[in-house]
Length: 425
Image (tube, rainbow, N blue to C red; front, side):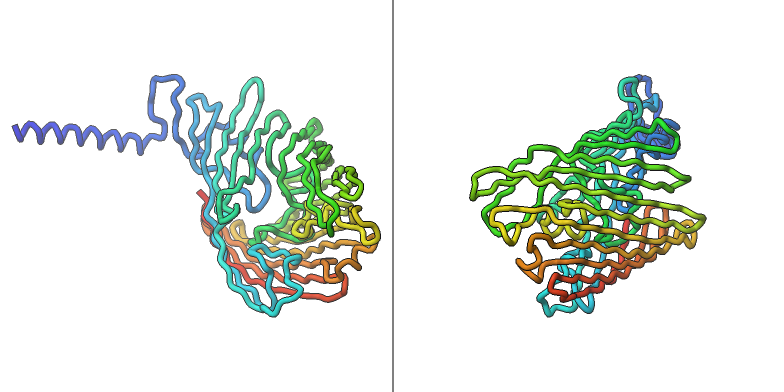
């Protein structure tokens, strides 16, 4: 009896072992069910799936790449990928600090004796879920949800949640008044202080009927950040933000873009009990030019009432500010931001880059006299070395210097050294 049991156990073990070996040697497990799914590596997906993944890759340095593994149907029309990365950064500030893990010159304290600071951050670790496919109704489509752990108390925070099909984008993702592909590659998660960088809920359409020319228009969720001395409140917004751009693609990974935004910002004047509207607007030019091992990138933005879109000014709630000579009235101040940078690819897996940036807020109607130590302009300088040690592992070192100058002409600066390790899966 014991011999029979041993023989039965041996036969079952051999069968299970052979099944495991078969599964390891064959990515596709034969199945007669027509609606079955398969787990494959991304390079074994169908040509259409790979094409859709590549064409819809988000362009920013901190965006996730294509997932390593996919669940696909047997016909290769649909694929679901789960991926992300773990990213850890160590930072040391010397000769002045920025009061945040992101290097924003607007957050350099203007009244502080603290000169040194050590920080570590892993909150930018990222998870995403991406469905891609092709159907008769939607054509090529992508459904993308993504987040990191930068919510309150390092809770999960949404970064992208949208569906894109037939040049339409619906959901929460990069806004139309920015150019993510023209952003420099920085370990600093925020990037240049003079760059426009934001995400918003939107309905956008991009016309790509010409080979090298794209036209884009979007309707976006309005958000207003204001600073006032009392007597005013930000109320419900009456109109969405409207953005548009035209982009000329001039070679591989090179383009020129000209864009704009117009917005209406509503607030309540408590003295009169009535709502009032202030118009904000902005114009923007950006470029990416690749030449052999070099890559040039830059952006210039000017407007009124568009503070929330800038990296630096977005920290200060200056979409609307009070007027010194008129209680209960808010105004939109002029502001600008720009950056320019150069990247050199030393080898296919190693590159270095440097970028200089500035953002500036102008005074009207006595704004500067309200508080002379308010932010006037900031400067941002970054240089780094990034090494793609393997397909999934990225290492880097970076130096940052920032200056903050206030309306009273006082100036404060900070320096930061960063080390990064990032593993994508």
